[in-house]
Structures are given as C-alpha cells and as structure tokens.
Image (tube, rainbow over all chains, first blue to last red; front, side, top):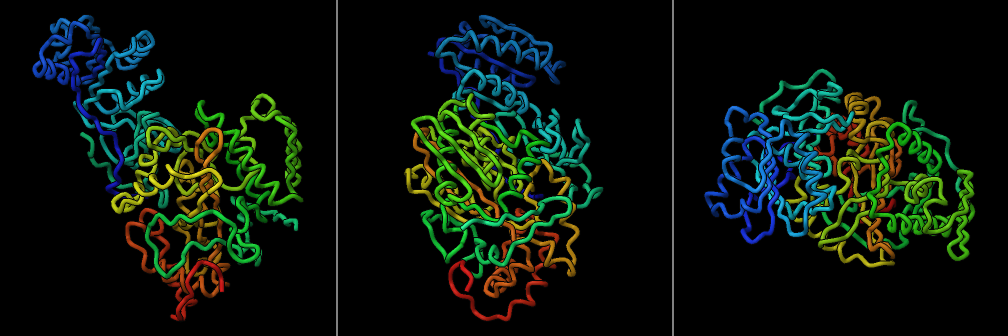
Length: 201
Length: 347
C-alpha cells in the first residue's frame, strides 16, 4: 500500500499559442496569469484580438496579475471572485463556443483538473486542451473512503477535510474527478500515522 | 451434473471454506517455483483435469450463491461499485448476451436462456429469477443490462472501450477487487489505471499487453492468472473499505496462519464483444486457505518457494509485508525440498 515512486500523473504541455486559431479561450488561476504574459512576449499580442480571458486570482491576489492581464487589451477580460464562479462562466462559454476555438488552462494542478472536467462535460478531448502548470504544487485529493475532496493539500499524509482519516496522497490521478487519490495511511495499525511531510509546496 | 451451493459468508463470521473438490479445481497461479510479472496470456479454451476452473469459459462453482449475496450487500452499502458511462450501452447488451449464453450452455440444470427474435427469457434457478425481456430495450429489465447480469455472475466485470489506439475503462461491476477503485479509475486509459503497479511499466509489460489486446479477436478469448493474498476470506478488499479490513493484516500469528491467510487468485479472461467492439474483462476471484492449499503437496512446496523469493517491491505493492515472514515460516514445514513438476495442476 505505501509504495513510493508510482508513476502516473498528468503531463502539462505548456501554452503554445497557434496564431492562426480563430478564437482563444483562456481560463487562468493565480500564477497562471504569467503563462499568458509569457506567450505575449514569445509570439506577440495579435492573438489577443480573438481572445477571451477568465481569471481568478486565488492565492496570488497581492501580485496584482489581474491588472497586467486587463492591460493586455484582450477582446474580453473578466476577473472572477472565486474558482467555482469562474468554472461556472467557463461552462456557459464552452456551450456557446464555436468549432476551432482553442482552450487554454493555466494555474495550479487542482484548478486545471477542475477546468478540464468542465471541458470534458462538453465533449472536449482532454488531449486537445492546452495546459500549463503554474504556482503551487498543492494537490486536490479525493478520499477513497468517504469520497470527500480536499483542495490545496500540501502534505502527505493529510487529514481528510470530510471524514478526518489520515490519508497518504497516492500518485494516482483521475481526470474525471480532477483529483489525486488519498488512502488511509494507518489502516493496518490505527494511530501509527507518521507526521505530515510538506511534499507539495 | 448440478452443483451443490454452499451456505457461507465472506465477512463477519467468515464461514467460507473450499470442499475437497473445490481445492483440486483451484486455479493455482504459479507454473514454476518463482514469480515475476509477465504478459502471461493464453487462449481461453477449455483445459485442465476434469472439474478444473478452466473447464468452462464462464466458471460457476459451489460459492456462487454466497458470492452473489455478498455482491448485493456491497452494492447496498456503496452503489458506486457499479458504474457505466453513457456510451457503453451496446457493450452492456453484448455482455449480458455473452454471460447468459455461457452460463446456460455450461450449466443447463441451473440456467436457461430462451430466444425468440428479440424476445428473450432468462431463468436462473439457484437465485429464483425468471425474467422475460426485449433484447436491446433497457426499459424491459429492472436495471441496466450490465448490472442485471453481473448480479448473477461470479467475478468482477470491466468493459473497456477501444478508441484512439487505447483501451478505456468505461463501465464495470467491481465488488471483489484487490484494492482498486472503479469509481476512481472509470474513464481512464490502460496505462493510467495501471499507474500504481510497480516494476511492470519499466519492463514494458503494459505496452506489450495493450498491443496484444488491441488486436484481440471475436470468438478467441484469452486468459491469464494474477494473484495476491488476503487475510480472512474477504471478497470486498476494496480501497474504499481499506480502513476496515487493513487491521486484519496485523492479526496473523503462527497459530492462525493456516486458517486466516488466503491465496487470492484472479482468473482474468478477456473477450472481444461483437456489436460494440469493446472488450469484456472478467476478473474472477478464487480464495484458498493455507491449510487447504497444503493438502496439495506440490502447491505447498511451490508457494513456499515463491513467497520466500518474492521481490521486495511486490511484497510492498501486494501488501504482504506484515505477515509474509510468519506465512513463509509456517509453509516451510510443508516443503521437503523435493523438485516440483512443471505446470499449475495438482499432481
């Protein structure tokens, strides 16, 4: 059960703007703003004329990335108060999106996972999404026992926010849930859980 | 010949036992005195001595009713053990047909399938089910076709869809699993859902197995054996309930090894389905107590040697760490060092 070195986790290929795409839809969170700012430096600002940008600042509020994004002059820019509110708008926009629109997701892994889920519910093949991991390596984890989801997990083990069990974070990721798997670490000897270790800062 | 079904449990008082005949038919998973992962697939054709688990394509045995009862209990507690993505309906009907036909052909005294065009009648005598329905019309069954038939067939069932040169775990009935979660893995591709298995990726087992399975042909099913160990004859060793059965691993003593420690064998068979082109993956679990296993001297010698020489990664992954030394020590009494004959069958 307590195996180290399991290999399975998403690969984030990085944003790579195709300037010939008809439309770009960006869903960004926290430090994910920097992924777009870097693309402007790399390929120029032309694509912004055909771009919608949704942004939730999350833990990066103090960095004021929203001001820099707003100043880019994209076709539309919208600052969401929270991630769930952003995902809700993303959901509606994907329902109205046209064939050939490129979808870009950047931010923490938990955010990318949730935005991917929204896209998958519209029949979008995850492989066609452009994704870039930025910011904290904190994980979104599902407790395999009670199915409760805990966001921003930075340690293993961690205490499940729903049932309180001490969970090992397995390197096993479900795109459908947008979450890693958490498994009780001291099941065989209750009370023997090791101290949490900061693994995903 | 009709089977006499045992009245037994796989939880609480754990009254599960194998009759002497059931021991002889056990699909012992080691063909030599050591073990490592391999793509050990062979055609799933009738084989083995009379009565062996390999005799029929879908095996029904003395544990049938008790296993179906245990499955119903698991589903009552946790309905997420059965799930099917919406595009899998054709594959569900394919599976229902395959299992009904195989069980009716293999055990005509217990099961009957009558077909008149798309008007079908299924009779399951041991469970007291007599169901008329329209094949292809899910509204004529009390539940989805895959759930209906897999509540009446031993083993876990996963249907994998084939697209983009990959296999996708898109439907399943999983209540007797060795520590994996359908609810977590549903929708994953072949490499993703095997992600946590150590060593096998590195030696290319999954790449080769995938290539092999993508070319699986209709009417030519294949099988392989896999194994692990379980403390107490518990079928539901799910990760969902790990915090409930995990403590059992710390209860093994030299006195209770023979009764508590079980070899858990999975007879996995894979079938190309005719309409959907999906693959049905049957994972049939067989349990045998150490004291039952050692009644076959060849198996006692061999399992002692396999368990003694198991690579540490596999000991860890299979969760044997706590009780392996005690079990090896107990088994050593039954290993006189004599050579063992090749193959899996008893001598």
